[in-house]
Length: 309
Length: 293
Image 1 (cartoon, one colour):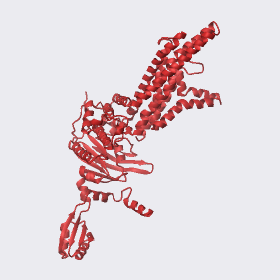
Image 2: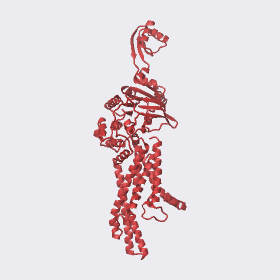
Image 3: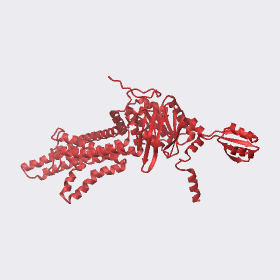
Image 4: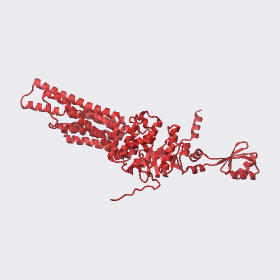
């Protein structure tokens, strides 16, 4: 379990993390979602005590990380896969970490096998691909058989098979009762893996809810095709329901259940011959949530592009 | 016997590995040892330090033997004075094993800076401080390992220098046993000096978090500062005393078989170098503890 209380980090005038409070529960995969620069990595570094919070505090399994007798058995972290001396072999790298806690050599071999790096383990890390580096980072995180796992952008650089593997690994670890905290800037990735989402934007928590609930927050829409479109539009407007006309005779209605739409159509004597509910995707829910919080707005970028033309 | 109940969340009933798995200072030391021993660069630098040490020892042995030979051919003042000069040669000869610290210190200092500087440049420090989040333990274990390696190099280098020097010195009647007056303390002090220089380098590396910058700063203190002080000492006597308190000069005094007038005794020299090392590692500790990794 990870508990953050009013965690804040400022760098000079810039506030990277702005008073975030959240709890990451064991037994499920919690996604930490936010655009690049939203404060995900800084938050994770504060959890591990690598960065000192400007204010607030964070506990892992009931204590500040550094206060544990066996930190590696409490938290396994993958922050930056490149946090390895390139001239050392993967095996030696893991042996160093194992030595700090008196972890047996057999466990080093176990995690190498689990992550599929056994064959390259004797070579210098220098020649590793991004994906291999990521696997080594995950091997290091799992070394202490930790109760809590923190992965920062774990699927970066992995091939599709590796991505699938990380997803299953995260779910498997959560199923064993561990706390699993994954960050990503890709909503699609989180939709596939996470049970619970903590959404961060500009250093603030925007949402903290089960994935299903966040999806539900996204406005459901419906596509309505009618022969009496004008009448229907008048009826919807009278009911205070938002819509837009996609093409003559086809409306996109938002914020109303299909049943309500059908009732309105009946009341204003409009025949509808298509009524298709459109589920909001996590992508849309996310865009909705972070609309005001995206650090680098694509609209602004587009505007800048036009200006130079 | 009291049983302490650890506060654990009942929901996280994860099977634990064997209970012996925990972080201790000695284990951190072992991990740092593996780090040092698993990089080829460590061996290369230590080997060069050793070679340099023996090489300088040999040169010194040759020069002492040469002086003695010249003295024998041309003769000199007779009687008590002659005896005094021969005694002087004997002291020079016994200083041979420790002479090599003159060059070995630069290599040891550089290796020590790299030990921590490279962790920052490769971001390995993130991994290190995740495994060993107690900053004191992290820095002190690293310090201990590099100091031990420097000490061992010093002892080994001095002993090889001793062995190599004997055949050179013996023809002039300047050969001596390891047990000869002052030899063992001089060798031990040479090794202690190198160990302290390693601590100095590590501390500076931890403050600057950069291998190149750390090496420049450390070698600046060891090589360039004495030159500057020497130039300044032409301006006034005040600076002459300042020179005594620089680590390289104090190291020379540490290993001297006989303290020359106006110089520091071995113990005083050792305290000066210790002060430098302590200041540097104290700064390094503060830097690692209070600044973000």
